Length: 149
Image 1 (cartoon, one colour):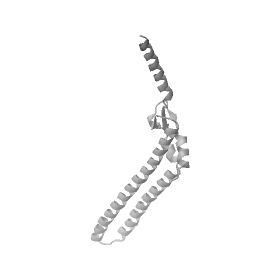
Image 2 (cartoon, helix red, strand yellow):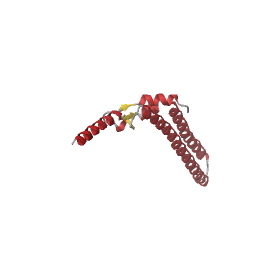
Image 3 (cartoon, rainbow, N blue to C red):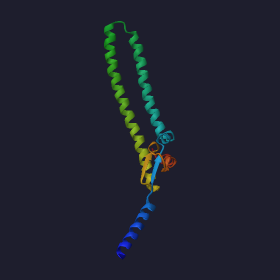
Image 4 (cartoon, rainbow, N blue to C red):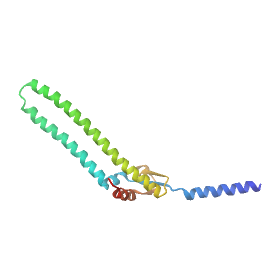
């Protein structure tokens, strides 16, 4: 009987110790982080410039198309431009995906570092948190601003 009481006391103490050591859940506002992260802004400008480049390509090709005088030349030109645009579009999508993944990875690494520093169990996006948690958005932003690109 004495061992049973001792076992219960040990279990209760272990439970309270576990609660005291639990760090909880942190969350970040990913959109706010992106808006305040210079590297993300730089990537966005780069990707947008590539998109504008594609639009300008189409405008230029439309002018060339209007200057063609025969249906055969127009048909050949359309096929050529369609292939060129397809290649440019693939390169654009590849660049966009690669650069966005780089930004995401940098934010994720900063969030992991803050999670360890703050002794949190997990970090979520703010949209996944209904109630509770610790907002670490500003800490992550500060860490990113201090990090090298």
